[in-house]
Image (spheres, one colour):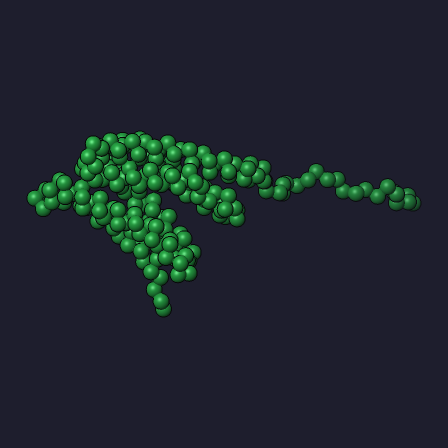
Length: 214
C-alpha cells in the first residue's frame, strides 16, 4: 500500500503542536529566552508550512481523501488554538481576542458540518475574506511567538498585536458572512416540521339510508 504523504504531513503538523508549546517551558538553563522564542517560532512556522504543502501535494499527486479533508482543518484549528492559549499564558495576547478567534473556529466548523449534512457545503466554502483572515492570523502568531525585533525600526510585538486585532476583526466579519450565506437554510430547517401524527377528529361515515323497521 502506497503511503499517503499529504496525510502524513497533516499528522506531522499535529505532532509538532506539543513540540512548539513545550519549547517555551524548557528551563532557561537549557535555552536562553531569545532561543525559546526563535526555536518555538521556527517549529510553529514549520507546522504552518505543512498546512499549505499537504493540500498542494494532495491535489498534485491525486491523493485527496475524505479522511485527509477531515483531518486537515482539525490540525489547523488545534495548532491555532494551542498557539493562542500559549500566547495568553505568556502575556503576549489578550484572552478576549483568543476567545473570539477560537470561538469562531468552533462555530464555523459546526456550521460547515451541518451544511454538509444538508448537501450544501459549497455554500459555506472558504471565502476571500477568510483567506485574508488566515494571513493576518498567521502573521500575528508568528510575530508574537518570536517577540524579538528583527526588522530595524519595526517592533515585532507591536506588529503581532496589530495583526492579531486585524485577524479578530476579520474573524467576526467572516463569521457573519458565512452565517448570512447559511441563513436561508436556517429558515428552511425551522419551518420544516414532522408530520402531525395526532388523531384527526374525523367522524365515521353514517349511512343516510336507515334500515327498514319491522
